[in-house]
Length: 162
Length: 280
Image 1 (cartoon, rainbow over the protein chains, first blue to last red):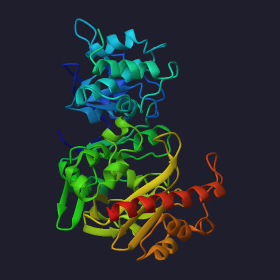
Image 2 (image 1 turned 135 degrees about the vertical axis):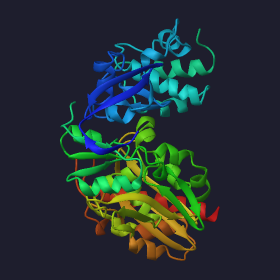
Image 3 (image 1 turned 135 degrees about the horizontal axis):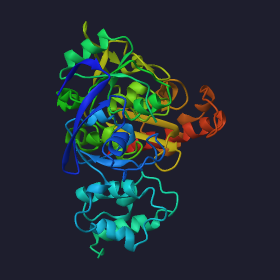
Image 4 (image 1 turned 90 degrees about the horizontal axis):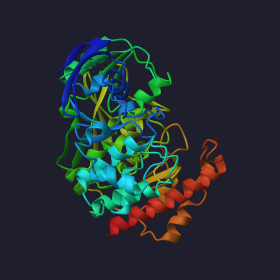
């Protein structure tokens, strides 16, 4: 839907994790704040808030984006998936693999890592180690040294996750 | 971080976008937002109105017309990497797109945004100078085209004036061979020094990033290489003395002298890459 005259608040309709939500928000509200504060989906984390760390990564119309660098109003009419939307009754193979490979310590970066890795696996179900590293370049982890995260994602592609 | 209060419009057509840009003081086009929204957080930019180009499908087209590759200003870097037209007619654009930032930024960030920001460390300004690009700029008064050398005006400044919109970047389709090389912070980080080179039929265009407010043509090196069948020794000889002609900045990442040296090395690598592709 187009907006022909400048506005400072807007009704935003977004389908998040399969559920359509409609909220009136100031146009300056970032998507990450919309998800966390308006929709109470606090799995998406705010790390650096400068577009560098990737902790706020979500899928916007199927592609990984940093939700701190998108306005909520830009997502009007779009489909969003957050980390809460990954698992159904059970954890996904990717989530189980992070657990098995000890792909997290403090867990702060984990939602973003999972969203970047799941976007990769949707496009490339059996990525090489190098492909995983490229896909995770936009996500910073301050605990693990990355090895276990990369191993966890590669293992999913090899079908090694339980 | 909260942004300052700002107005927002999302035009459905380019005409509406031009009318919004012309009719609102302090209006600014919002492309992918990967730079603009972050500098707005820091208050380094404070537009009054954001004109969101996200719904303008015609700005996302890539096509070859005759001997020209046309790329819409809103084509994302990820789309450049996947474009079959780019792969066939000017693959260096896709290769360089793949080295910008990270997947999430490439999924939102656009070619038009990368060059309209005109950060001296950005990837595409020197590459487009080497490729002899032409920019199409629209306003309510009509269309004008600007050569790449007139497009980049200063740090964060381009030929796009208030009320105007960059809609398309055009480069010659085909060409002989292209190369780009540089030194970055980390694997895919910000450039400290870089060079882009393009050769067609023995004629070279070489552009340097990171050494001045706008990309710098290495015209002396271009003429030394002109028409010769280059090998590594020739290229090293042609680049000799280039650094002394430059006045690059010193910062925490590199002193001016070190940046001169890195620039010479980048030119050698970019030229050899372009030459190899031209002969292959």
